[in-house]
Length: 276
Image 1: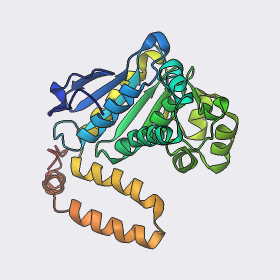
Image 2: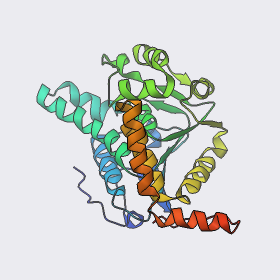
Image 3: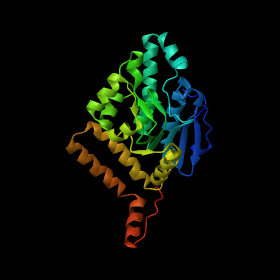
Image 4: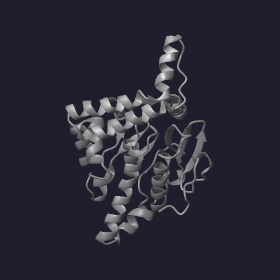
């Protein structure tokens, strides 16, 4: 677990293993070990997981941007600080580790705030998983996304990749990436639908922040419901999905933001949402 307890509101929290800045209603998480292309460690896994879990209780942050320092997103698990120690572990400890890494993806998907990933340069292994687990992905031409697990003798079924990646790029394309571990360049990643937008490196973060700020200015409860339904409906048939969405939408109709939107429309004004 993270030795530095998460405190609320998150704007006052000082992260130890990643950069954190809260700009208005948007939190910016920066993977910040640029000298090693921002790898993840046991400690950063744990703190990131605790952070995304805490987002569910924070009422000030409405959207999140995840990015990397120094022109790269993340090279994945640190070779010496993670992969080396794993070789010496027994099955019980290895399973504890693999479950812990999966908890980060669960936390990212469970937090109500939409997550925008700003991806430049290397985005590999667990770094590619963090990008995959985000809600939106903005990239650059020089980005290289690679699910490298087979390159180190592991299966591509890591941290939910076999469930989530096919839903983003399709079964055949996901199979290619997970079997070969090849790098997916930025322009191809956009064509495949992994990237929502392709930008120049110097405009990447600003564009991701602009999207996050736009989301943050919207109806908070409704956005959280959309994220929850997008996740839940993977395991539903169409009829169950329609029923679940009927219940979800009825709940959204009870919010103050729904009433504000109607009154603004009637007055021919743009609604100003307050998140309640």
